[in-house]
Image 1 (cartoon, rainbow, N blue to C red):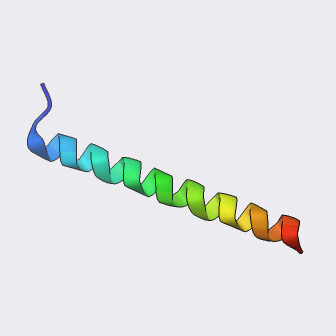
Image 2: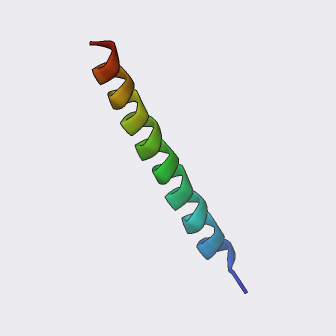
Length: 34
């Protein structure tokens, strides 16, 4: 069973992953544009 802390940490990791993915895609899009 997950505790609130585990759940929050898991959410933070997912947010970080989304942020990394978005910045990665943004960088690729900029490379394509140039």
